[in-house]
Image 1 (cartoon, helix red, strand yellow):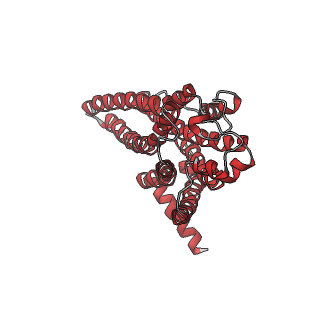
Image 2 (image 1 turned 135 degrees about the vertical axis):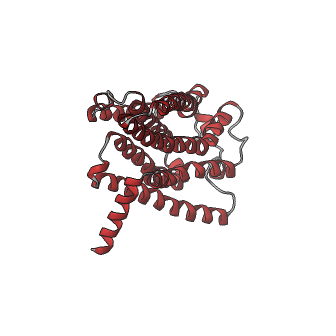
Image 3 (image 1 turned 90 degrees about the vertical axis):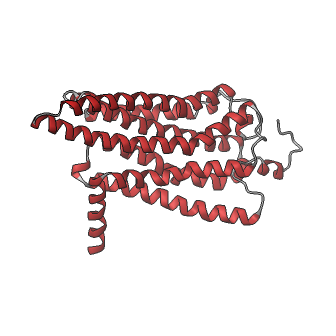
Length: 309
């Protein structure tokens, strides 16, 4: 659909993914997203503070976790507020609304890229334990983190650079080029899933081989490091799986909007899919913090220290 001059404001608002049809649903959504926004910001800010304030946690692996937490925190600081303001943004201009849509893609891609980067980091620790420190230096980690953000920003803002369907409506199916949608679906879903499957299969094979060789003290120490790395990898696998489950409906809806019809899915479905994706950013710090003993201990120390002040 191409909106002409006779299109009413009500038509534009009804096209928005997150605009409920009933007032009470709007109130419920506003309250829920407000609480979710606070949880996302406080949870990820807390994780970043714990890692930054604890010398023991200042490692290459946790640098990637901090980058992931920053990406998740952007959901609370930018993406959720943007969804409150989408109707206003649309009426203020098409470009403003497009920026809102592109920011969402940037955050999604940066999140999955950081999760995948941690998987690669732990794979190198397992597969090449003797060379790991020379491979994953702080400098190399900084380059990797910077690359994930730069690539995510470039891919996210391709529609504003011209790769979009000519339309006067800020609606995904009428704005995103089908080729761009396939690229985002591949980068945000298919490639990370495929790469992670290969990594975890390789780690499983290495772990099985290592377990068979544990016969002396040195091998037992190696086995302990292996178990530690495997636990971290398992945690990252949980984060990866949960990200895929949370964002897959959004990616599928983008494909449906672009290749079938942007009007096929009802507004409540788009609202539900977006909310599931936002909840992912709230649970990431809880999942990683709960499964990491050092972070749990440091968090308890930080909380008790604040209480005693």
